[in-house]
Length: 82
Image (cartoon, rainbow, N blue to C red; front, side, top):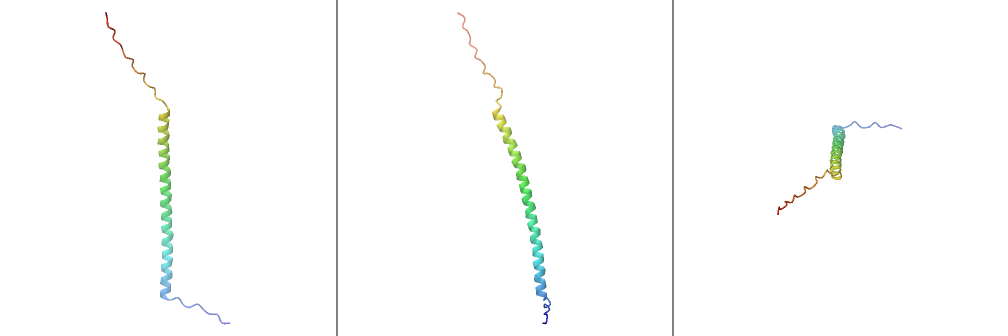
């Protein structure tokens, strides 16, 4: 049985393979960039959520803690001397 050797790659097939390889590398880089940006967005959202919750907790604590209310001043009644 005779074995066949694969045909020599043509310049077109080599160029196509190179384009595919470059596209795959660029795609991997783009996916890594998108993932890094998504992580940064999630971290920022977490930071902002913590700030908002702290602000809301502080506001709720101020609403619950009654401040020392000043007593209303009593009205003085002038007595009429007769």
